[in-house]
Length: 58
Image 1: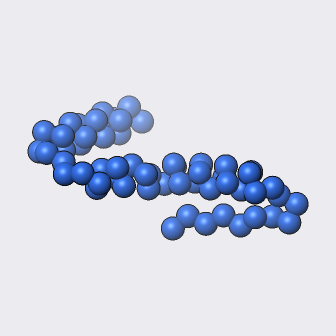
Image 2 (image 1 turned 30 degrees about the vertical axis):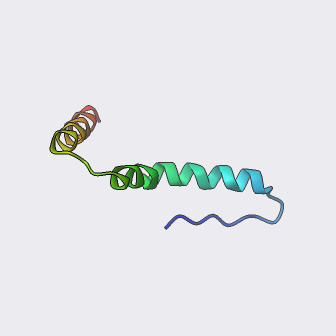
């Protein structure tokens, strides 16, 4: 779970920006998008193929 504590002299906008950055890095939205709709076998294959390519580049 992603949590952001707002500092005493920190604005809510900067805390919100930090929260959005942490959520995007953790991949929460990607999981939600993936689980929202049924994934066909070919879509699953393409997604895993893309993940393998991305992992190989690192």
